[in-house]
Amino acid sequence: MRLISAIVMLLAAVSVGAATRVDSLREAIYSPAPFKRPIVIAHRGDWRSGTENSLRAIRRCIDMGVDIVELDIAMTRDSVLVLMHDDTIDRTTTGSGRVSDYTLEQLKEFNLRSPIGVVTRQKIPTFKEALALCRGRLLVQVDKWPHFKERLLKEAAEAGCLDHIILRSSWSSLRKNKEIGALPREVIYIPVLVCKGDGDDVRLDDFLANFDTPVISFSFRHTD
Image (cartoon, one colour):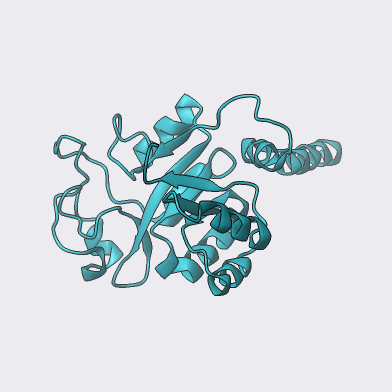
């Protein structure tokens, strides 16, 4: 029995220490070598097969082999982070009003709607529920995050998912850069360079000088 117990404990230790898919994705992102294939990001999950920002939409991403899932967060009246894109829950649920009008328990009484408005059995997920599903499987790009930065980082740390988190924004001043620099080293921060056709090179030089990031996002305002 002692021998069997020792083997079980050893196997458990190896399993915990084994590299996950997220580790492989992070390695690819930070590697100076070109990507061997495109990295696929699903916007609000696979919302065509499951309601946007739902656990089902995330599961579909896992099943399809998606690399990164983009999710939006909002905070309830009792300070719980949930997944929601709009300012109100009117479009995507059977309820109405702002997320901050409700406690989590009250929000769970509503059902999510499909992309064409059909009522489903799905509920508004918490950020923690989403992280539990993504852990080891998907990187998580969080949108609408600046107002909830500290809470987001706390919940991600508690879930053991800080190294899953990707944050993206267009902040570019030196003061803001220093603020971003205070993020945990595990978090991937992607600065967004909005290209307007005038002064783009200067802004890019500023980003390269002040951001320690493996990725820069370019947003083009023109096609010339």
